[in-house]
Image 1 (cartoon, rainbow, N blue to C red):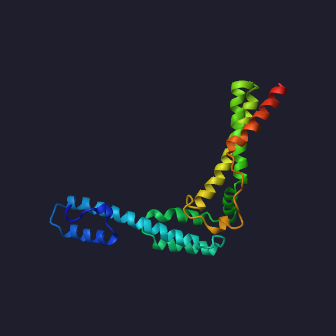
Image 2 (cartoon, rainbow, N blue to C red):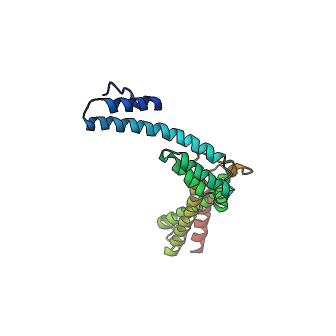
Image 3 (cartoon, rainbow, N blue to C red):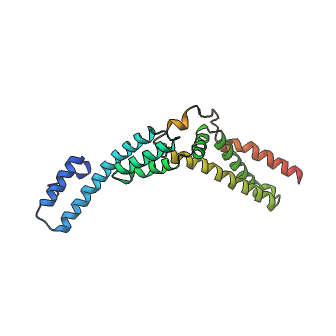
Length: 209
């Protein structure tokens, strides 16, 4: 049967359908024929996934995600037309298109708020480590520093999660997220920004001891 179905991994949809017909009519044990059907169907799923992803992306980017009516219409359209699981991230994105989540994603895109959250989180973590290694200022200092790091890390991750969901991991960046929303010019890594804060706080705590 391999001679009937050469290069399945490179076959297009029309060729795959021809292969399925050839396998179905071929005189062979059913279990052997099923192996080839599974391989061909796997190839078809890959082809359809690419097509579905492109179609869903087009629908998503052309939907007014600020309109609940348009969002629900897009969800129905995608569910009706899709043949694979490639549509699922787009459905998830559309379901998340609330005013609040869109604003959160816009904040992440702009970069000021997430940069601040990340800087504070790094500052808390560095202060926690410095307290263990150098300061020995007590458990309360370490506790506050660690709690700060955890809280602001969670805040950062919530912003990031909204952005990744609404952009389908940056495969489909909707204009509603970028319109009149330029990125901040601050490019320094949050870790570097946190260093002077952590050092200053450490010095202040040391002087107060």
